[in-house]
Length: 294
Image (cartoon, rainbow, N blue to C red; front, side, top):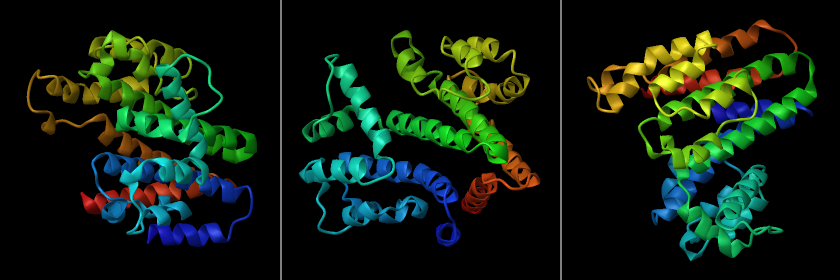
């Protein structure tokens, strides 16, 4: 129902609102693409995952992949062509794959061959890949919004800045007690931090060095709002590391961010003549759906 309403509203739009709504849908496209790649790596046909896909992130090429005759195990050539060439998120994938390939081989390359894609996608951790693509999408969306200027840049810019900060906190806290907090993997974790937001650049610079709860708290000291959030969820991560009670009795950072976001999206409707209300409307409807499912 949300996807139908979204498409109905988008059908009435003119530029630059049409592109703005395209950006909203791109986030769901990334989720769908990552889910299909994960299914392919687990030898599942894309058609089996059809009902798990987010309807907002459905695009033309996805219908080809969802057909019964499509064999994703035959290689990633067709997937490469559809995802990286025929979709709005293709540029994010292109950059991601080039970066992965650069790490593997420092020699400069003009581009990536389709034959290499399968190897790269198979080796990369899917969650890290999704986080990297979401970071690229956020930065692209923010650049577009700032270019528009006016009240849209003010209201939507604020929401995207908060979104970027929350992403930094999510990545940092979820990396605690994992291999991503070890010195050798810090660079992989830090690559997931968006290059804008209220924490950027000073706060992000400090958070790049953290590896445990104490250093996280010290880095967040100048940011009272985020420090308060961290203090509320600290017990959850302590419990996860084996100290104290079960982590199920505490709130995670995701739970608090959902609550903070709802308030932020509601406030977007207080201003007039800006596109941020469309983003806020979609996000609030998604939260309604989450509430029903929970």
